[in-house]
Image (cartoon, rainbow, N blue to C red; front, top):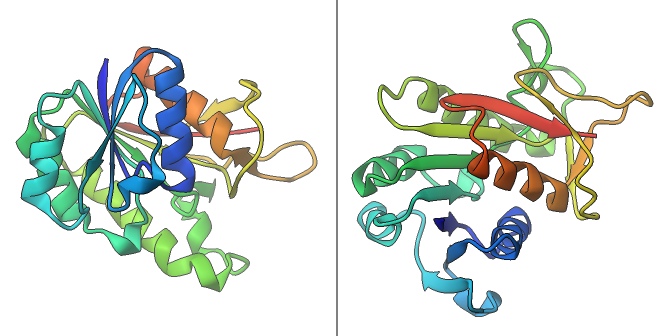
Length: 203
């Protein structure tokens, strides 16, 4: 497939770009700092700004799929979603956050008293992005939330999938590596199972 990754130089975006290229997809790696992206036969760096709606739409046009892997507080969901619509891209996938996941029915993680204050604003912005996607009448979107800890690690290919509930291991830890998150996202692109839905991945 021809896939555009918005935010391709970031922690998650760089792993997603590498995973897709590894699988033989043609990736347009969109970032402000394209010098951080190593071009290859499968990866084409493209300079882009997440706040430039028209520019993003032009960069994404002609792709089968677009992936948004950007910080919520450093972007505007209205512009990102509008750019995806304008580009007429086949699918739009978003690297989400864990804050919008539920820890009990109707209770989002971000609203709990033990949620870290330092990450609260970003998590709330991510939850608002998800709510906006759910109100979209036509866009073919998918929102993938990581587990509570989203960190550098290894590509194992062994993880669990869920829907709206925070995944935790037997020891109570909730985490996923950037590398395995990228595997789960690439799997979803190749074998669609969560059209116009949010899902989550964790160990």
